[in-house]
Amino acid sequence: MFIKNIIVESKIKNILKEFPKNIEYIIGYGSSVLKQNSYENIDSSKVLLDLVFCVKESNLQNWHKQNILLNKDHYSFLSNFPKSHKLISSIQTDIPAHIYYNTHINIQNQNLKYGIITDNDINKDLSQWSSLYIAGRLQKPVFLYVPRLDTSIFNENQLNSILEDEKMDNTVLKTFIETQNMNLKSAVAYSLFQLPDIFTNEDLFLTIAGISYQGDIRTISNYSENPNKVKNIVLPNIKHFQHYYSSTIDYFIDKSFIEEIKKNNDDHPDQLNLNGTIRHYRKNKDISELFDYIPSIVFIHTKLIKALPQIKMKANIRDIVKKNSLIQTTKGIFTAGIRKSINYLLQKISKAKKK
Image (cartoon, rainbow, N blue to C red):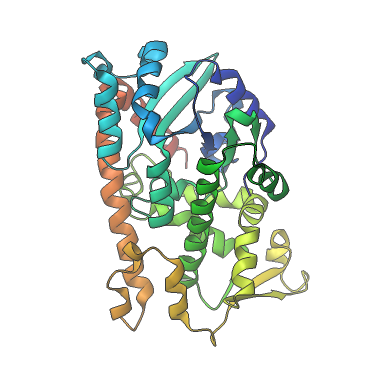
């Protein structure tokens, strides 16, 4: 389930008044939501707030039109074109990863980067891993806020109560939850192919968190991303990952794909933060059944390889991420503007050097 973060919720409520309405839900991710080792000495007020705004596809052009009227300075030179809202909407939906970012924004002394994505595009990536750009970010614990409810969502009972309320139209939120659950199941299933027979929670979460960094052009060269990024995300946040994946792991336990083996903590002092729990892949379970949980784009041609299918799947993941991260980065030069893009790159390089 999603993260509870009172500080992030307060920040979102403060800045929302500056934006057009009709945002279906807001996703908070990154170092402002999850503590990362490389950010421990940085003033929390200076940490960039990374947000994704989901709007209905049918409302996208109008949302950009209203946002340009309210916040023209958020956009690059593209907002100067006639009918710029149509151009921007087209760039967003027609070019992978189907998200439009405005970067280096300052609202009420809060540094902000926000992306706009449609409900259809986010659901496609979550269920099909078409780009693994947003799906990858949501494989790590994230924060979820629903403006029309004026609340964040962080536990199962609360979510079920909202979705079962027949007085509200929860179609968009419900579909998002369904596809996000598919995304988490896909992440665990893929990781089971990559992990050894015996593994810890930490091993599982490191594998999951690393999925969307395979092939990412920022990490291939180490020029703009900390090479220890995955460990910096996972190790300080084991409990958040356990909470985030608890129902998904329980699902695979019920399906007999994995089992819990309780060990005395004295025997495994290195696993104290894991509650002494390790996971074991069941050899007597037909491994091919795991393919049912993995998007077809990942295991294409993999079934033809009887030995070591995990190698082909990893190569497919790398190709998906590399292609889409390259396109999205190139698109960012135009959507953010050259000056903002250079400043953002320099900040990334500075952080990477502090590894």
